[in-house]
Amino acid sequence: MGHEDHRREAPRTVRVFVVTASDTRGEAEDESGAYLKTVVAASGHALAGYRLVKDEPALIRAALDEAVRAGADAVIVNGGTGIAARDRTYEAVAGLLDKRLDGFGELFRMLSYGEIGSAAMLSRAVAGVWGGRAVFSVPGSGAAVRLAWEKLIGPELGHVIRELRKDSPRPA
Figure 1 (cartoon, helix red, strand yellow):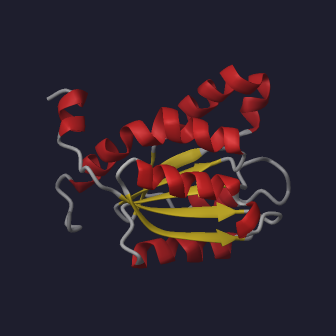
Figure 2 (cartoon, rainbow, N blue to C red; figure 1 turned 135 degrees about the horizontal axis):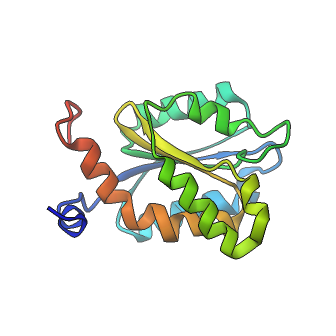
Figure 3 (cartoon, rainbow, N blue to C red; figure 1 turned 90 degrees about the vertical axis):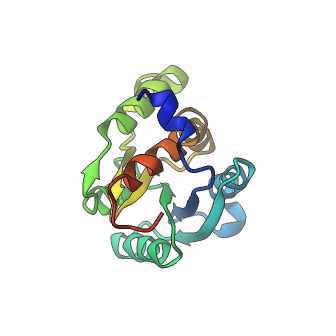
């Protein structure tokens, strides 16, 4: 069975929880979070919830726990993936993952390189599996969030969830 067959068998609706990690944005300034909430719905998926938290590992973990309680199949975290001292989302997310999808970060940086050049190497975008859910962590800029959704997450979200549900004890 090829990847096109897998896409055809993918769930049409995925429950997505959006987390914005930022020390500087409030909900009114969270354009990236607003964009994600809009495209999730426009793509026929269900918004399981949204949370804006400070870039603190304990708060990010609490938001991920909330996503579990909300029944999310996937979580998209935006913000805090750089290398500044306050950027700690990568550590919070990567430290939880049961399995990493290394290709996500590699492809994100490759595509980002086409837009912003060598500065793309500063991104620590990461994705993987945590507790039977897909977790994607991307930079918080509008351009980065759009790139991640349009080129990577959006096209493969259903396929990723299909793969996670195979032979899984978690209800479909």
